[in-house]
Length: 442
Image 1: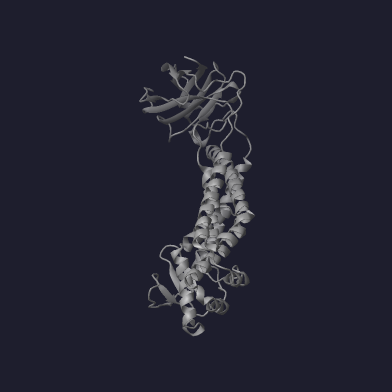
Image 2 (image 1 turned 30 degrees about the horizontal axis):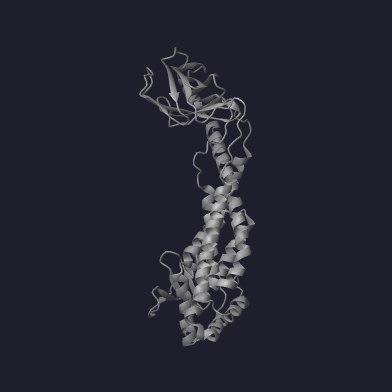
């Protein structure tokens, strides 16, 4: 790996670390709040409304990653930004670390874990689908989703997949259950499909993969599956409340799935049977309480997401002596040259904070046309930061150097390449050298 690629990886790792910590904290807070609310909500408002609390973790994660208006970029140390591509070498960068950043290693470790978890989930899904080979379609009225009867007794009942979901029944479905129990089993799987539980499983599996190193992610995945089954049971009983005994008998006759089903809803040991049967004895909450439960779940989700968004707002750094006011204008003096040749361009510009100055098709003699964009923003400790975007000329691709200095000090950005001869001496200097001097006021 070249030094330039190494520095790019370290820069990416720094950004990933900053955003990753926010995501972990937001997810932790949301899951802890959910763990405290799920059982009381189930008791007061019913299992269907309690399941809506699972909106908290994804909304908190999203809120933690939303940008905040007016936030300055992450601080960078003063540097001389230099890139070359002669003979596969790079000139040293002043201010850059000499060792490999631990954050880059952590990023690679996280990517490896993410890939492993996703591959394991895909393999489990494929194993389950292979058990469906030879399944026979069943003509079942008023179901609304394709129904398949498996070739073995230990597959199903289940809802398989998120997109184009299918209901799978065991081979002995017609013999194991009586007519009432068959209707209740189909109603249960149809409720899964109608509620979009396959998509919930897909999103939950992806979040668990992204946060594979967080123990609460795996607890949340199992708890969501459990609450999902309770909510589905509640939906069935709301329509077939007079058949609670038959529904309990259907549960007792149903076997646990032999294989895991990451994207889908199958009968699993993760769904405690005793709690599900105990719920059959509870009184179903009325319509008013269910509506209040939806309002509570939505309010809790918005409150958690809003709190996370507010908490991730970076505090404005305290102004130190000599620090520039963001409302002021800045003067930028720019001197442009090629290699060691005399300067080809001099310019002085008055810029507002964040206002860009563009240079296009600047005459660089033997070099191709070049484009540059420059802006000045205030930084801590009284410094000014010059942010640039450069492309064309001798550059292989766009680059975004930054440099900091005190007002009135000169900094240099040098990009491009130096071609060497057989003896290793510089035969042709194709670097663009830019001397920059910012100051406060115009």
